[in-house]
Image 1: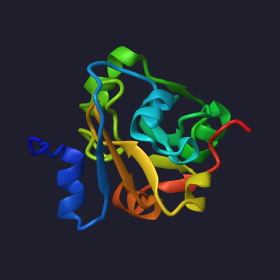
Image 2: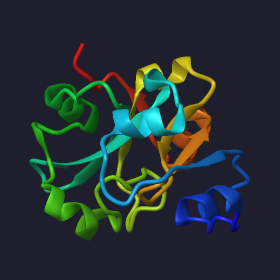
Image 3: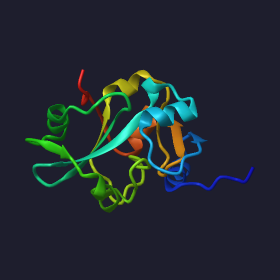
Amino acid sequence: MAKETKTNVMRILDKNKIPYEAIYYECDEFIDGLHTAQLTHAPVEQSFKTLVARGKSGQYYVYVVPIAREVDLKLAAKAAGEKSVEMIHVKEINTVTGYIRGGCSPIGMKKQFPTFIESCAQHFETIYISGGKIGVSICLSPEALCKLVRGKFESICTR
């Protein structure tokens, strides 16, 4: 089997000496997180998606939430210190983050935005996030991720 190429996410993790496992899966186009978890055999409760929102102020925020849950926009706004936030449109993902839908990772965006990780991530030794492109997932420590992206653990999901 040919050696898999490293994504920017992996290069950043390597540079920061953060241990991780890269999981590759066959996929040519966007699939949701639940299907990705099935393909990679990752536990659903430990699999997280990366969402980007814009606050009333115009500032962008990154939210890392479990794939089977939804972000609560009121809680997300409160965590960010905003009056309100709304998810950016799919068409904006590449322009804002440098990533495409289905390959958006909280690591290595064009700019480091304030990042909030659903607090339940702290209950796991490792979590799964996008590796920065479709077909790649990364398994790593939630604490290491939080430290790397200078994030905060917050309750930001609907119950």
